[in-house]
Amino acid sequence: MTGPRGPRRYTLPVRSRRRTRWEQQTPTWREARPSLIADALKRSAARPSGNWYVIGASRDVGSEGRPFGRTVGGVEVVAWRTASGELRAGPGACPHLGAPLRESRIVCGTVVCHWHGLSLDGRPFAGWDPFPAHDDGVLAWVRLDDVGGEPPLDRPVVPPRPSGGTVDAVFTAVGRCEPEDVVANRLDPWHGSWFHPYSFVDLTVLRVPESDADEDAFTVDVSFKLAGRLVVPVRAEFTSPEPRTVVMRITEGEGATSVVETHATPLDPGPDGSPRTAVIEAVVAVSDRSGFAVARAAAPALRPLIRWAAGRLWRDDLAYAERRRLLRSTGRFPG
Image (tube, rainbow, N blue to C red; front, side):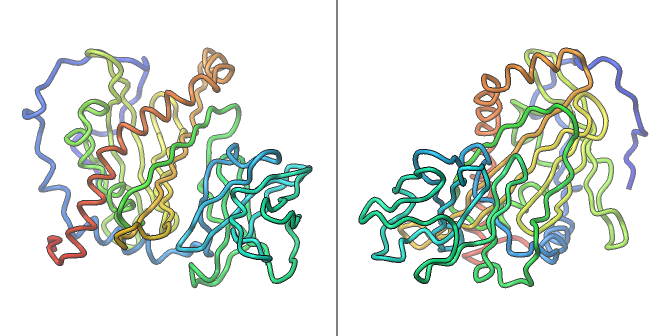
């Protein structure tokens, strides 16, 4: 479906726009049909994941110091790197007396339990069997067949990313909801300039998926706010390649081919028994402008700023997801 505006070309990355009051925006509730979002969510849930789950940023899993630990779908997972840098993962409880391996130490690429010194190098030992693990260069994944219950895949479904020199950052937050609530939030592009007016303006949904035969993507024109009246207009697509992932890809404008990957990983229940989900969002940015080399050199300083911007959005979006889950659990969700 194509909107009233046809394809447009972008020349300057930054534009000045007239200020518009929040309440003077064009309402989007008629376009954001609940059935349309629900159908996109169903198609997403039906795609294979191969039982792969994102556990965190690749750079957060090291070969020295402490292992990386996360509970996924109620299963304790510990991850670390061998001396040669290969990712390893397995159950988070020591096979001896159940010590939490995430609190142990890594010595020369081997996990050494801090209770009694049992060492694990990633191979099966005393009933401890490793989990398949994958490092895609930005994110670390683990395959949990007992949690996913699907036919396993050798590799996770990693969305295509920009090639060449990129800047990447990974943000993580935890909400009291389920992965489908996070995915539903991202498959509703219409809320962008209403719910996040500090970041987005002039959002128009140009195309929505109307049937299984269509390319299953939402296409939007939107402007990212910089400061004052300055904005950066882009065209972007939202797709969901597997049940727990939504990808926003810039297709036209500044940073074309850059992506924001939102991954929803189920955790252990909260103290009150409510479900919890980790939102692990990877931003992979690229630009063909010569000045982007400066951004790549300054990547360590830029990553906290990127995570801050993502955190501001997810402060609101997790409230959206948590509200959706509450309404579903009480039978009050519309539709």
